[in-house]
Image (tube, rainbow, N blue to C red; front, side, top):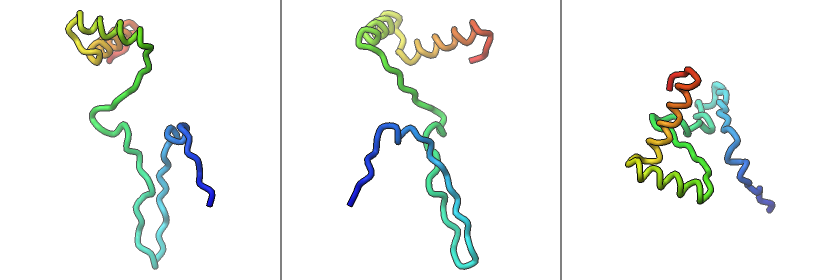
Length: 87
């Protein structure tokens, strides 16, 4: 029996919701799969840093007495403001 290999790209493919039609004989079925990520009040992101970049960022956060999360939001806010956009 052959098994399907799953690669990392399979995890990034969008999940498609397919609603199946009903007939008089059958009962309605639930959609096959529904998107779950990015629906809540908080959404996570992931960034990649070199060890050196992370150490500098971490050290700066400690000196400033702020979390890396707070520094990131302040940085985005400043960039948006420079472009005349609201954040």
